[in-house]
Image (cartoon, rainbow, N blue to C red):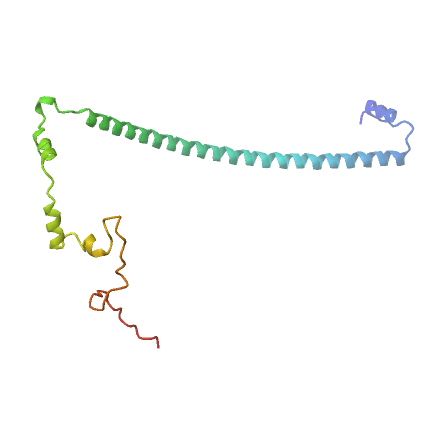
Length: 171
């Protein structure tokens, strides 16, 4: 130590006993230890925050790459939609000039009479499936006539139901 430092130290500690100086030195050392611990805590927190920031930065970069891929897919889908719209508009825009249209087939279909006998022949031939005439079904086409019930009055000869096969009991 130099003489100047020794004089300053004695001037600052004027009136303190050696025991009081030891206590003051101990208190200052404890305060320094607390500050060292706080400094280490701050350094640890700083490292954790940096690590978290780097992880978030990496996940943001990955999200940006995913977003760019989605935008690329969206652009491709929009281009496909535009192509299909143009194709549809082109298809709808093509028309046949009026002089070249053949309208005779349409007029022949519009004026042709509807052949009812073909339906009757198809029903008679069994091509339409099971057909029940209204007059035999018990239902009346005339709303003024009372409805007759025939389902409970059938005889055994009229019964067209089939018996279910009997299942033997489980052993």
